[in-house]
Image 1 (cartoon, rainbow, N blue to C red):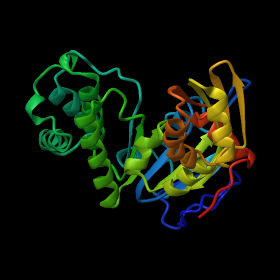
Image 2: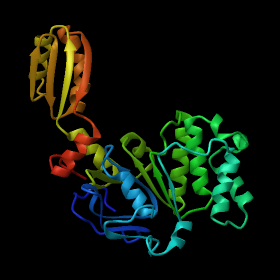
Image 3: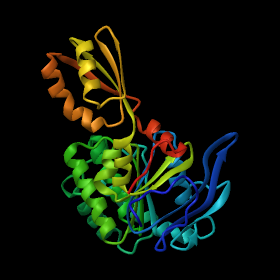
Image 4: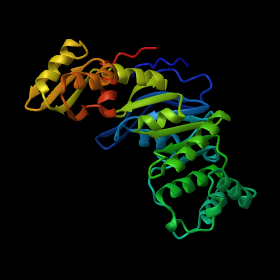
Length: 324
């Protein structure tokens, strides 16, 4: 698929899609959680990206059959998740919720998952899953003694014990320390490279950037964009931004920025500058030298309105120009 994202309009799933969401909506009473979503997921790692409340978790629960669409259809490996329960052996969800059976050891927790799904050799499957997430040394410790990051790894192991073809992860890096995060990202990318379909939901672009080469972005229950990480990064880089600064000699610094032609406007109030720019990268590179040249000591710089929510709303509304 091209790195250029497509807009929010429905799109045809990739030809190798293992998960197909076709015109799906889901509402709870008067609340619409997912609205007319058509999208496909194929082998590799796809990031499901969007601000909190975008509908990501609801979509994932629909894919694994924990909830049923109010309208539309979902197939996994060609099977309807509502009508064919056998698909549950081929798809696994690692939920965001941190709750686990804290009185169990990691080995018991993962073995329970293997037993519930009737695996032929649950003990060996448990051993492999523990080894995969690098928890073998802590396998016989109770989950109550685990850090949040270790519990996340135990939850991933409980999903992997089934050796699913489709692995769905809802905010899987929450609570993991940098070492654990790196290990989990390596695991997910390895699974994707080996032909598994891995869907990773996150509201953190930097996390998705490290493991996914394709993004499905959602806002308010709708698709905002589909495409590559590089294209999203380019859109964010090019997005007009507003920065707030505090500096000594603010009037002099404002005049220098305007002369350098890297800002579209500056408002000064006391020591506070509200700066609007079309090229935040150029401003970031020039600002230290401008401050030095004008003897204007910078005390604070903050980017305003740069949440994923704001960015994706602009994408959905066409305000952000996508480019190759």
